[in-house]
Image 1 (cartoon, helix red, strand yellow):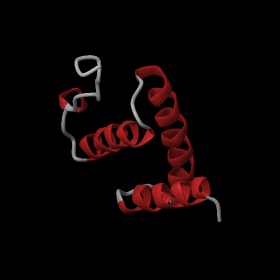
Image 2 (cartoon, one colour):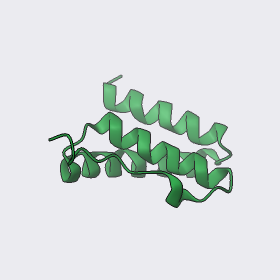
Image 3 (cartoon, rainbow, N blue to C red):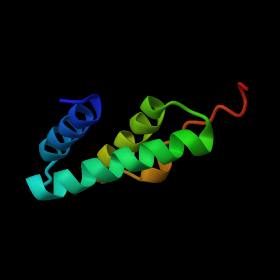
Image 4 (cartoon, rainbow, N blue to C red):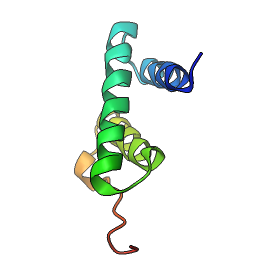
Length: 79
């Protein structure tokens, strides 16, 4: 199993634990990975930092909290 496949499997499992059906979890995992890669390139952050932010958004939404309160990673001040 490649590391990409392992990442996708772990994300699918997390999405199922958050209440998604297996089919929804498969789609969500693929979308999260793709968006994390995009954010990493756009914002000059690591893929891990992007994924952490995206997962915080997912959890906030699942808990009914305002996702706008989740601050995006921004390294413009430190670079």
